[in-house]
Length: 155
Length: 188
Image (tube, rainbow over all chains, first blue to last red; front, side, top):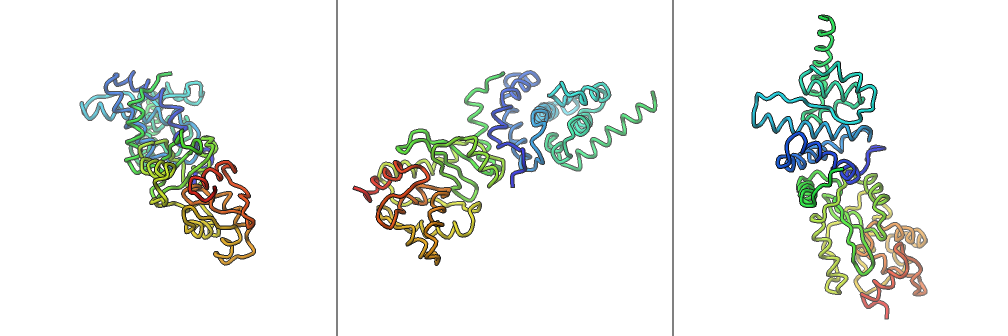
């Protein structure tokens, strides 16, 4: 039933809750962070049973956190543009290489591309991080890649 | 590392329990007369009572059996805690709790079902239980079922003794078995 390597949610939550709260306070301010904290981990919980493996959970949950900040900002100011930063594990070379390439992508596309190609997460997991679904994540990643190709051709 | 304020932590745990998204909600009852107990409920009912909880091993096992969405949520265990408190205080003889034995093999379930009919303050023997499930030679196998009982106390494996009346064994240690039988007045 449980997939190999996916830790019990309790352990996942205890490992990452401090860092998630710190990120939310940085990005959304102390007051707003409290509500977003709960929303972040409820989103993670909803998707948790579908995880295929327990790798890159830190990047995954920090992305969910960033995304709840963006969604909350959109609810308040629908035209606002905020960067979704697929956060975490900065030491990973794949992500560093991707970062300058993906900087100019729209937030969701950037997150989808980095999680897919930088962290090798499956689309179901990425969809969960972005608060959408597998298909939307696949589309965001492929739209991002198309955009990158186009930019490269134009250079 | 940012400390998460207790109020925030409690609020998330309560919201998670209320969301219906947990495979198992658990808590550790720290001060029962038989020592700390880990208790867990799924959406179907009580799925774990564990002595000497080593949370790591217990949580891994629950994840294997019921799914990885396992969280310590004291609120979800209120009823279980209350019934156990009443039992330990001598004010409750039967538990009024649904149980979830889906992770238990079929033969074990049959034996546990039979076990659940052994009344408060009474004892039976491994051989008797074996005969009652139609496997009269399986007294030893019944012993194994008792040893692996996922819900000790609630499914009263402490009420099963050897044919000569000796306590024989107990998954939680003989001291606890003796304490429980004394509580129920089955031992003087």
